[in-house]
Image 1 (tube, one colour):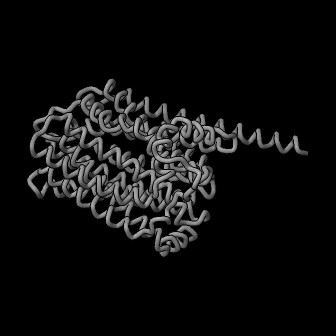
Image 2 (tube, one colour):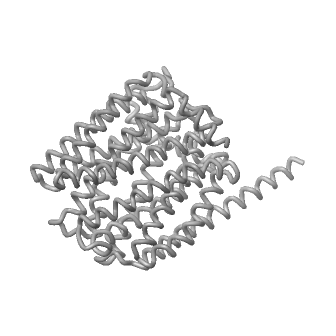
Image 3 (cartoon, one colour):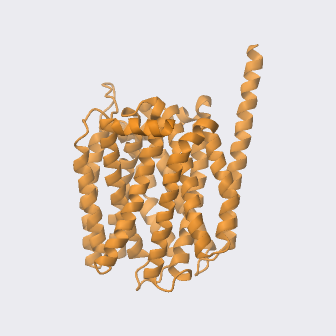
Length: 433
């Protein structure tokens, strides 16, 4: 099969393998760290968690990054991406160790959240840099396959890290601090592993006429507007459509995640530990869906194109999400975790490819940072909506139907825009004749 052949060629590329190694360690550490935080905030027996508390935690962790994100893009287009991976992961190792110390000392919640926020903020630099650097180690012909393998492998690493965190938490007497320290160790390994990549390989290319850092930060707003204008150009309309669709799909994912957390905590299990095990199973099945997306998406994009594949993913979710979610039963919800993992990751692979192929390298870091900001705002917004709609036990048919309606709106909007683009193309051909 062509996909298998391309995968074999990719893994033979030395610098692609090394970049993938950094991604796996970084996102594996993310999985460990995030599960430790979830266990501490949501599943602690002494805490009576509500949907509002979950939404508040997400807002504290993610919304402030929306202020940092635009600066991250500007800096990523000037800093050596290899150095971002080295120093970013080393800094996260120190911050994660500080989080563990705060857990042990039972520090005030605001101090704990501030430490976690710093880890999350640095994480945005690293993940955006990994996506922006990928075209520097892979040729254009295999970029779709690389986007299937690399981010999906990273997501699977995060899922495996989450599973490892569950195992360590069970073995080491329910110690969330020990799990966080494991994440700190993996961040340290990712930082040291980044040193195996040549400093200049990953870009961006040096431009002698670029201003110094202080001037660059002062001109952030102007540069972001330039990036938006770059994105708004007619020939990049496909990029804007893909980003808008993916942002709304992220909203759906966030709402369903809060619903699943509440169901696991209070409805599907009698104990917090049982709820954590159910959540771990759902995450593992979602990871299997990510793996399936990596296998299916290159084939689907090759035949449908990336935007049509996103449309197919959204349309499938429109039908299956209410069918599997409305029973509020463990079996259908576990199936839904797999299906939505496949659909969400498949759409993300296609969106990443559209951004990478249609956006110039000089703008790529900023566009990916805006991409991340949109993700976070949509995710937190979804958590806020879920907090307003969810009852204490998590059973909300209205929320399930709302999410299905959003998926349906995405599908219709993409179909109409694709039809309009085809009509404009035919009109242009007729005019030239």
